[in-house]
Length: 131
Image (cartoon, rainbow, N blue to C red; front, side, top):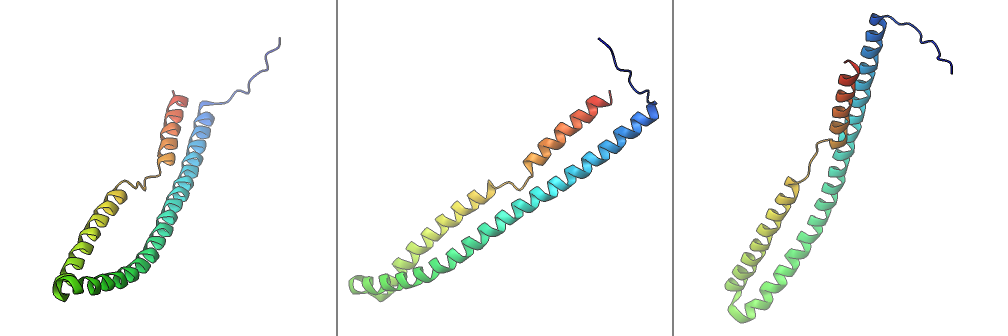
């Protein structure tokens, strides 16, 4: 069993290597965090565009249906009361939907979780290597 001789390196060379590798590591992590944030922003933009388009279509449909309901109720309770009843009902549904949407948006995290976790691991690795 033979042991291969190791190349003797000076402490300044080793420190220089650690600093270069650490710098490169943080550059790479910076690229990763930018890419991850960009992906999350793109997801939010696509979702927001779909929500806006859907909301416009539903708003037009709601206006037409509300008008039909007001006309139908006008035969039973009168035009003024039917408009009031339909308006209040639609307002209550709208408030409930806004509250639900607000709650769902509060849970969306734009924090780049994978990158933060990787940076913590890298920090521990660098700390362990410098001991």
